[in-house]
Amino acid sequence: MTSALAWLAAPQLDPVAAVQPALPGRAGERYDGLLGRTPDGGLVPVDLLAGPEGRAGALRAAVPPGAALARCTAVWVHTGRLCPDRPDVVVGAGRRLHTTVVVHRQHLAVSDVVHLGGVPTTTPLRTAVDLLCFASEPVAVAGTCALLLAGLEEPLVQEVLGRPGRRAPVRRATALLAVAGDAAGRRRS
Image (cartoon, rainbow, N blue to C red):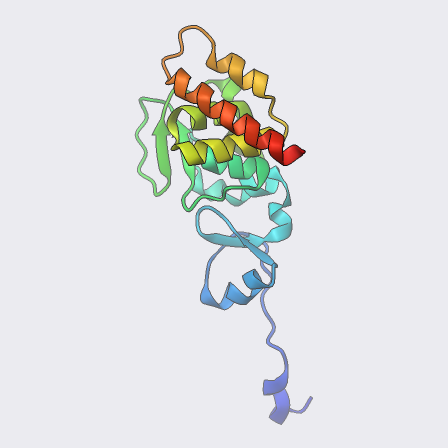
């Protein structure tokens, strides 16, 4: 093509290989289904968001040292559903963090954390228990339903909630688990 008609040539876009800020110039690629949104407001190629490791890896920079992705963010990592506006992390009760993510301070056992894509994330079981005990009712039911549909066993969650010595709101959590279990059962059939 001659230089006089060079303006007709399609612009060459730089490929997106990692999380990038949601810039106005990338809106078309998001609408075309090439880029997906992450909880920290970034955009990433949708093929990286196809599995839990890729979703967790997209949030690597948002997780402070000693923290783990939790609650709605962990649901998004495990299932691909319920992408929150800001990442949630959990840290030990005595830790202080200065960060832009939502921080929850709770006891965090090593067995409650799984590393996905090199990023510490609460297990589906711990995520469901946290949601049922502490999240708003709609979020708790939707998140737990998503985890149940992804393979989490409802009796296992019930057993953890029924353990002696739990100081969390067990009655509320048990009632919400029943609602989430019913919703998951309706979606399966």
